[in-house]
Image: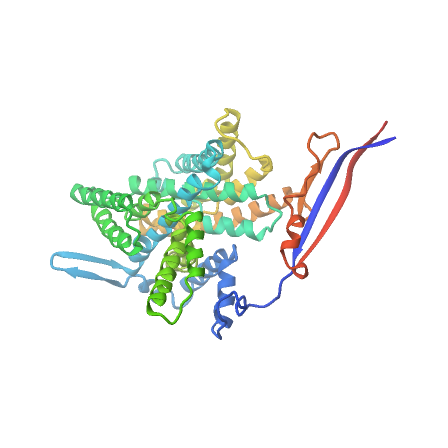
Length: 505
């Protein structure tokens, strides 16, 4: 007699919908306009996970091409154009390069802090051991590369550049994972995203401590006062983003005047952003019910009630998302497709004039990223798991952690940002070369390594069912239980049963 010992149930579903850019025009949707022919493709492109990395790569290549073309002098002088405002003795003036690095990049660090706050409170890092895995990985990815760099540059004029090799470029790392496709485990994406975020926050703290000028304590006091005002505004329930932006701008000015690098203001403000929703789901549904019943009529009072209901519904729909989520959605396209590409365009233009290159500096940065990042991340995460401080997700294997560590060697924008502060102009070109070479090699090694260790898995949800299990096979959570609720023409499903093993009795 044959007894089935394991049955693998593969549930594959495919939703087929109308093709085309238009998602409007139906009775229950917004009206369709001609501008949608332009807006919808652009919106679709922006939502592609790897798109920001592609744009960033293109702008870097263009910057390098211009820096090595007959237009190189004009291209270099462009970033030296100075402008600002002057009010009596108060002057706020910078070069175009300075405005990009100090002001625009504050938005990037603000967004990074928002993502970290969301992951800690609402996301995967709510589990302490899961959070510690990313924290230890980021710590290893900063300590070991810095140690390698210092070992190679100890006593050299470029010794102070150790912070350069601690950075990870979040956009490029996530873009590489997106290019690898859906075969990459979700846990690796989450691990790398949180690692890069923690790494970037740690890097900006290094900038604030290691590369800031002498402190102006009066400005520090005004900055702290501004942070206190933000906290009070949040406590009393002020919801206007405009008011918070105005106070945040004042804080940025105070931090900038204090001698601390101004981007630190973005980090702190991001971590202070509330994660609580003002309107919960029950209240939102109740408000929407009022909108449905408040039908405009010929009477003036009825129309006023309907308008008031619509305004209330508009505010409720907006406030049903937490401030962290709303700001993330608002800033992601601007940071990914404007701030970071402009930063890369202003900083990535390295002139390949080998006469001014310091080979030892370039090699130290290269080895710090290519060797130090994967080694540090693997060693620190392994130690944390073995000590019981952190836990490794079931579908995240150690080869994947090592491959992720290789991708973390892509420093690029963050590394350029720190290198611009750490090195004098004569050293900066050598540092740029090391950063570029390390980023390219790390990207190639990481993608090849992860692709090699990624198991080919059939599409769909997989359930391993054993007849001896106490619980029966349950398909209630699959798309088949909801098939009747959807348009049958828009849903195609298939159920495959495969024998995983059997034994004879």
